[in-house]
Length: 304
Length: 268
Image (tube, rainbow over all chains, first blue to last red; front, side, top):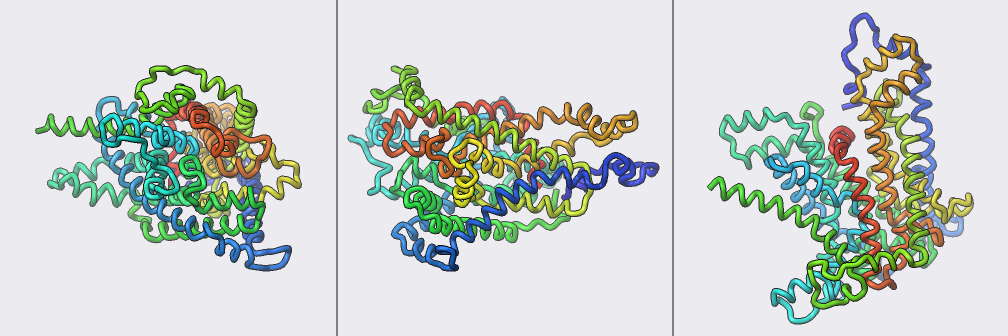
C-alpha cells in the first residue's frame, strides 16, 4: 500500500485533485523536504557502502583479492561463520514461535493487559551488551544458575558454563540471552499486525465450527504474513550482526563474523580484512532479505 | 475444566513475565551487592546486603562519567538530527504525490536489509581526515544513519493520521502553508514526534559496534564497557550493565503508548 493510497481522502468534485496543494507551495516543495535526508543517507549509507567494498577489493591502490584470501586463511574464519549461522538458525525460529505464542496469548489476556504487554516489551530497550551482562550474572561460575542448582542439590560444586572447553553450553547461553533480548521486537511487530486483522474473520470461522488451532493456521497465520516478513527481515539482519552479547558472555572464546571484523579493524589495524568481513555479512544479510521477500511474498489482493 | 484451563493460561502469562523480569532483577542485585556478593557462594536470591556502594564506586571510576556523558551527547545529537532530517521527509511522503516518491520509499526500506552499524568501519578513515574521529558528534552521525529510516517511516505515518482537511481549512482562512503546519499540524504531531525522538535516543544509547569502532579516548558508555570487559571484575561489569539498562527501559516506558501504532503502520 503506497502512502498516496492511504493518505488521499476522497475529494469533493469541486476541489480538483491537487488544486489546493498546488496553490500553496511550489511543486519543488516535496523534493526540498526529502533532500536533507537523501543527502545524509548518501553520505552515511551509500558512500561508506561503496568504500567498504572498495577497501575489501584493493591492496595498496591496486585491485586485489588479498584481503579475502587473508580472511579465508584466518584460523577463526570458518569458526566465526559456522558460529554465526548456528546462532541465527537457533535464535530466529525460537523467537518467531515464542513471539507468535505471546501475541496469541495477549488476545486472551483480560486482566492487566497493558501491564503484561509492557513487561513483555521491556527487553526492547535493553542493549545487546547489557543483555549479555545480565545473563553473565546468571551463568558465571558463582552466578545464580549454579547457586540455584546447588541449592536444589543438582550439583555439588561450581560448574563452568561459559568456558572455552564448554562450547556447547556457551553457545546455548548466548542463544538464550539473544532470545531473551530480541524477542520483544518480533512481538511488537506481530501484535501490531494482529490488530490489523478484522475480528469478523475469526468469528465467522468459529460459527462454522473451526477449532482454535485451525483458525490460527488458516486465518491468523496467512494474514500475518506481511508482519512476519518484516519481523524476519529485521531480526535476521540484526542477528547476523550479533557481537556484544557474545563478547559479554564468552569473550574471544566464541568467534562470530562481526566480532572478527572488529578485531581486524581495532587490534590488527587491517582495514582491508575488516572490510572483507563487512562485505561478507552484508552479502549474507541481503541474500536473507531477498529470500524472505520471495518466500513470503504477499499478493496485493491478499493484503489485509 | 474451564477453571483449570484458566489457571494454566494465567501461569503461562506469569511465567513469561518472570522470564523477562528475573534476569533484570538478578543483574540489579548482582550490581548492588558489591564485590563480596558477586563472589559469594552459593548466592542469596534476595537482596540481603544490597547497597549502592558498588554503583557509587563504579561511578567514581575514572572514565565512567565521561563516557556516560559522551553517550548522552551522542544520543541527544542523534535524536535532534534524525528528527530534523526525518520529519520533513515523513511530511513529504504523507502529504504529496510526487515523482520518485516510491523510489524514495524503497530506498528507505532498503537500508533495513543492511547491517548499518558495520558501515562505521570505512568511516574511520574519513572521520580521521575530517576531525570527526573520536568525537561524540562523529558517533552521533552514524547513529543518525541507523535511526533515520525509522524516523522517516514513523513520522510519515504520524502525518497520515492527521486529517488533511484541518490543514486545508487553515489555508482557506488565510494561513500560509508554513503557518498552517506550525499552528495546526505540529501541535497534533508533537507527542508522536517526541516518541520518535526517544526511539532515536535509545537506538544511539544502545549501539555498541559503531561507537566502539569510532572512538578511542572519548568513548561512549557501551564502547567503554566493551573495552574493559576482559579486565574488569564481575561486579563492575554488572554495574555497567545496570547503568545501561535503567535509562532506556525508563524511556521505552514513556513511549509505550506509541509503540504499536508506530509499528502497525510503519511496517507497510
